[in-house]
Image (cartoon, rainbow, N blue to C red; front, side):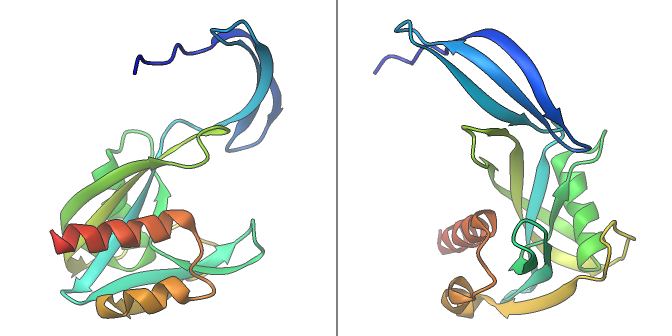
Length: 182
């Protein structure tokens, strides 16, 4: 199958802006001549990381933190933005230290994923973290995160947890299980 021709951008206009994002309206012309307007969120461009940390061979460490979009607390893996000048690996190690009080001697890249790419330009790099050592950095969370150890053998029960709903955390868990089965 021949690669699709990317639509031509006719005009771009920022229609809203926040501290973290800007919303842009783009007028496009597709290869068949059809013109359409789309809106997309442009991120900071820095990217983000998510880490599946193993505190021992059988135990994952998750965090429960406030999720403003749902206005409740959600269980998931440590995550955060990549700071300017950081590599994804450096950001992953920093986020571990900030959120669970451990650094990692070994980071295994799983996959870089996007979230709602039809509307949002953001990439998240997912890692497994092993060979952890205690080290704490001050993070930017407004309250301490609840740390939740979880046995890998109970992964099915984690998937059924009412507060474990974030698609990126679910994908990270499933990719981790696949990686370990290989």
